[in-house]
Length: 450
Image (cartoon, rainbow, N blue to C red; front, side, top):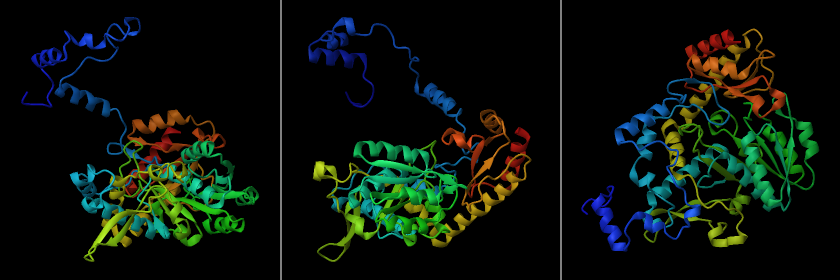
């Protein structure tokens, strides 16, 4: 057979069966009792040729409301940011998109250097001493941070704000069940963490305090105050953050954070209907050896030439097994590369400008929407590129979203889904991709749909 990887012909099939020594394909299943074998045809569509299948899949994809054909004001963790075209050109190179774990540094210098650059960028953004090669996403990074804190302090109590992303808190709960950690949630006040309730929740057996800034409602938290509170009880402060916001907001590491985590999706990674994304994880030097995953280090060879190697892997389960401090032994190298290329492109000043655009445009949208009769801004806290609006009492959120979609707009996140007390509230995200005309039009359509 000359073309080894093309579908087989009937003659090929006969030749293989003869070699095996059976009469038919059915004979291969003779050991399976007839009473438990399925007889008939599965209820699936008939096979299609390549052209028909391509058209069929295209029609299915066309049913999705993507951010290229619709104007999106939906955020809540996945954002419609600009992804420079050069990013896809770089990450589509075969030496990157086919690369696996670079265990052999002598043949993986390009991949290792790319990861090293990502780590360096994250350290600079977060104000922390050390960052790892990336995590699966921001939610698992948060849960792993809690695990690190419990091991470092030898305590079991984790205090987390309800202003932290609900899905991240869900992953934390799952981790906590297996690690025998106690998770205590603290409520919010005015769109930010209730400082008084947090102070009461922190006890001598608290391992970590977890806050998000900007939080799930888009509001900026008082990270420094929470750090002082946590450290007074010798607990660690874990801060989840939006890396794009750090173009304007003081780095958490300079506000007392011991661990800074988050999702790198805003940094040149397509939303892709919810993932995959790339988590980042940075710590102070004191906790470097407890970090999950891996770290790429810079070194020199015998000739003094700069090189890169995987280092500090002792915590991984394939080496330490049951003594491992984490079950994570991989990373999102390709998506971390997207973030690195993005940060290389925009630079320090460009990041500030993009962050400023997010801030300005979201505040303009907040003013426009607040001017609609019956719509109000329930929380006075300062925000970055997301904010909450309260809709008129009795608003049918599902019907409203359908009307917006019919006009070509993807509305904000219905907070009532995860915060029952916030039924009738919508979380609006405004990125640098939104124009004044789009914001104005969204305001008009929303007003007409209420």
